[in-house]
Length: 139
Image (cartoon, rainbow, N blue to C red; front, side, top):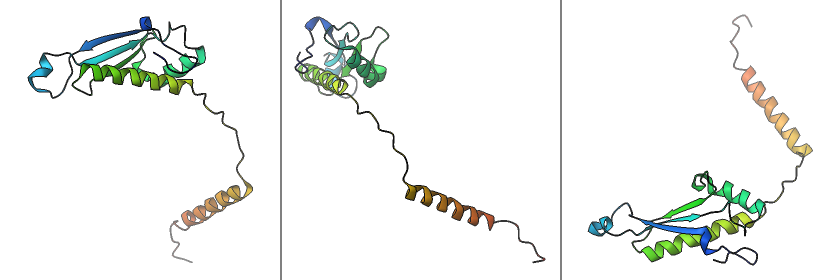
């Protein structure tokens, strides 16, 4: 399976398991295993660079196992072949997303105008709160 020019996934890295799908589907849902569970051995993959693996792990979240495998479950359609296609497509999209390097944030300082506006707003708010004190009957 080809992801981009540098990354391609070998067949041994992917294992598919077909299970019964949940939800509606009539009598057929109890007989046919249409849902697909795609397992990608990402940690052991020689084709993925280290930084891409780290980003993929963060993107995968709960789908990442302790063994370093990425598990995708698809049960959208009633067709086993279509679910298999969707699972492979999602895996490719996830890996492509992990390949993108995040832009480094450049630290900036607040402008003088924004500082002054903030302080003015604080002062106004303080004055409003100061007016809420108890009224002295003598004055």
